[in-house]
Image (cartoon, rainbow, N blue to C red):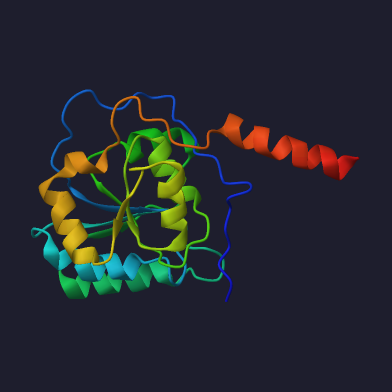
Length: 198
């Protein structure tokens, strides 16, 4: 199957208006996955890898099941119970709450391995976070445009343990500017739209 590439018109990285914390981040309280729940998103993989973390560390699934997959919330809860780990499925999150959540004391993870574009990854980056991202062509493309914007992993357990020990590494440096911005993307797209309209 061909791999989608967005080099001609990449998705923009948003920037949250709320500034990132000035103090050293607190020790993480859990592992957060942002976005819709659907098969292959990787929530199950995160739950299975939580044995690399201290007791009490759980999964925070920030989002709601996609249409037709409402059973996934209970399936995750059952898996978590069997593993003795906490699991919370938030349901829909209003945009106004996102900055606070994205900048809270959690490990940001985007575990879906077959991603071709990701609003959730860009939301983490826009909030000043450096999420753990499974190795993929898209992750490589992100790093080519914005070096250091994500932490690519091959083994999730190892990545979680490392991030738990050093949560500062899940934050982007002050002043970091991910590329492309919304303005950058508009500048790329406007000529294309102008040619299409001609």
